[in-house]
Length: 448
Figure 1 (tube, one colour):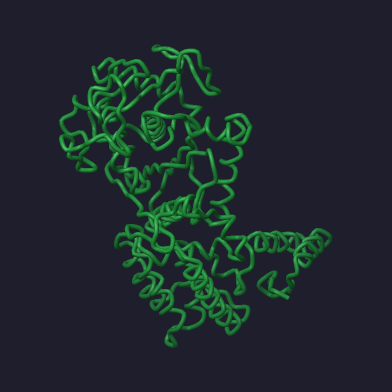
Figure 2 (cartoon, rainbow, N blue to C red):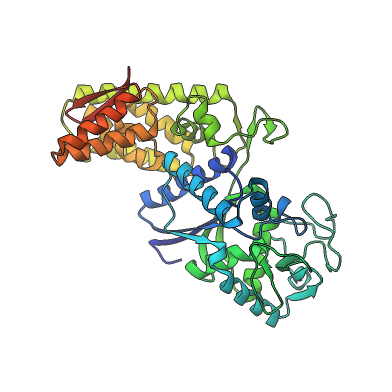
């Protein structure tokens, strides 16, 4: 709306447990979108929420708050659970080389904004009161369900539609839930309607409009959010403002495991720690995700991530050879040749984030004998701004990210002539059974 500025909101995690690799694929896709916008010269204001209250089990209007359930599972307070799993989430993003949001919103910090939004909906006649909470009346909107193209009349109560006593329609949803009589929740607040907690959907509307305005450019999330969560965000937001809520919705497809839906009962529910325990780096997983378009269901297997690791190592080995041929020269100047090939990459990536084809362009550049080594390195540097694979760090042996970070820190100490700190980090790396070499381009870490 206001170029070059872009307002972008991403549905973040519910921090009651570890994110699984399907969640992580979504955040990698978010990152590719953001990096591509930046590459095109846009100034992205990226907002992401942390849901630490109000998300009920099964995304439903009944049942237990996921946070309360997580706290009971681990014998901790809800606040401890939220902090622990939020920290794990940020650690995941760092290891995946994902750019962090400009603004992070914890739902529990925006209760006032949520209550204010519900009050406005109440004043406009969009709400009604039943025994367990304040609900949004979807019958008041003629275009409810437009994002998902819902057949309202054909809907039946089922997996994601609850039968709640007093609801006027199965599509109506909770804005504020009351604390049950005689019960006490760890997270509850006073409101004009009584003590309770916000519904999941109202949180994202309140936080996104707080930071990006009543209408903003882009809203992202998993494809499973379309029929309920994002549909309800649109309904309540546009009912309040009378304006279009979001201009572009971008949804990311599911990840399946060996052709089956990921679930704990099938034993194929994996987290980042499972990947690391199998000897992979999270950048191997990032490379694997780059090979599937964001709107295509991605199939994960240990065989596929092994192939991804081998391909990434082969790519970086080729880049190492190019660097060795070049010597100490550092390409800085764009040539007609680099512009031509970079424009080809941009053309692919700007075609609905066609990253798989963008990777093909990169491999073509690396193997093209008509491009000079200096031009190749310049192009790799430019392209990796989007891919985020740390291709120029010169490691072709699947070196853990934390060791790469130690190597970078060691280079900073060497530049500052802090030899004692530099030697300390050398010992830390070598104690993990890796070899450290000082090169003209900095610290090189390799396996013994």
